[in-house]
Length: 358
Ligand SMILES: Nc1ncnc2c1ncn2[C@@H]1O[C@H](COP(=O)(O)OP(=O)(O)OP(=O)(O)O)[C@@H](O)[C@H]1O
Ligand SMILES: [Mg+2]
Image 1 (cartoon, rainbow, N blue to C red):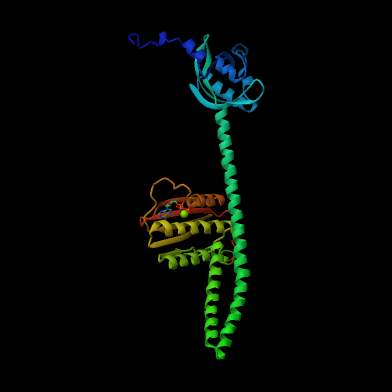
Image 2: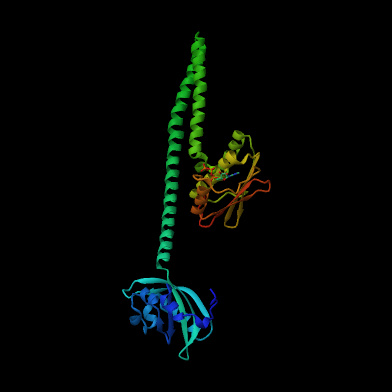
């Protein structure tokens, strides 16, 4: 302990440089004048075989220009040091990803570069794999979303058209039974028929509501604005929440896929209001800006707490995914009333008109 601290002159630099786990090199007149074992091994060479090689022979063809440009900038003294990533060329031809940091020094009376290098190939590959797997997950999520949407639309049509049609015919017959039984001296039969008619009507309403929950018929028939209006009104009535809606004067010009995604985002947001917000009021507004649809949904509830995401909570994630699918941006903030404010921006360029007059 008594000998500490050391002067720089006392430090055995050679040992440090040669044992360094980072590659260390000196470039003089565009050739490697020095390389430690680690640096030479990155390229698949022994130190003896590596020293003397030209820089351009040790990098991939698409990196040569950048490497030589960076070299000259420092040799000419225009930049003192540069920290950058490039691709080296291994002895057997494959690319190695390098992180380099080198500065201008003087070597044998001439300008040279002294640098440190890390082989970051594993890290770059891991990042590429992560990016690819995120991309694949996103594609899978989009595929599942669109398959689910198609299936819902099919079921909604079956329930609405087929089941709804059969129930309406049955109701027609039951109402005839009610009329006929009224003329007979059979009060019990008449009561049964009348009860059956009420049951038929309830069944028809239930089938319609199931079909609407699967996919509102009006989304294809009348467009997004009118569907949102209906949905909001029903939501208000069902949950005793005061609702208000502001729509642009001009018809919305949305591709059908965007209309569906926007509708689903609002649907999930309303479900969240009902489940989590304890709100008394909900405001939905749609504005048209040049090439942009702006949708805002505000509630006056308790607001979103900052606690970490509940495992398994998928609503907000699904909304973000849907927004991204249509090139939109989704943000959450605090509404002026203290609850949650959802803001969705959807680009309108390349849009084809949505079905119906919204
Ligand atoms: N309008 C809101 N007001 C208050 N809290 C909200 C509101 N919307 C969302 N939250 C909070 O954000 C959390 C995440 O919402 P998210 O929709 O992702 O999950 P969830 O509704 O809990 O479950 P699900 O996966 O069934 O949608 C909710 O658990 C709730 O705490
Ligand atoms: Mg939810």
